[in-house]
Length: 306
Image (cartoon, rainbow, N blue to C red):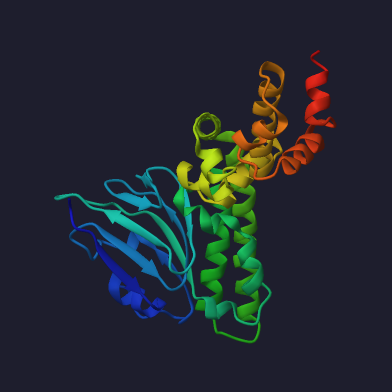
């Protein structure tokens, strides 16, 4: 197995130095034109960890990135969003030549200090999507986000004054809001990918309830499902909400009710036995959930088949 180094980059100045750029004009925020990078400072595959935020638009050929659990070649306009301490990697093959295009916006958490964005940036869940999916944008969307980044670059390249931070923060927030909109569109338009996730989720739940796992471990948790699908809980929740108008927990409960209906209508198992087989510690909890979902108690539902 090819050895992969781990490189930790603490500051934006450290990033500039590593990548062979001039000293940054601002110590806490910078925009990198990737076309100015003639070569990467690595001769083999490497994982990078930043202590700052990184938003990147990459259009590369001849280079593959490891972003969470997925590999991306970035031949088309693709964005990804990294929070501090997340990991991504360059997958470099011998003799590989990378042609870099795009930009990277880097900003340190200290730049957000004492601003509203310092707390609200946590609401942008796609910073946690690194375990699954980058953002694929159209030419029109690319023009929008690139224009915002150009304004940020122009602002910190000008004489810094009392308004500079507020203006840059406002542009970063605008960029994040547009990305939020584009991700919402992606949930709908990338039907093949999302359909596969739904199919995997259905099979995962079916296999779980056919096994002895419910009796041994209880109902499947959102974290259990996310781990097995290799996507973050937030990404899964938002995808399901967009496509099915259900949260992950609601999706699980609906599956439980579906299986319970089958057992109630086709077997002589007692309500307590069914509750136990489905992973409930107390039959009362099962009956309460079933009635909340169907407006009938389990016994009333069974009686409707007689």
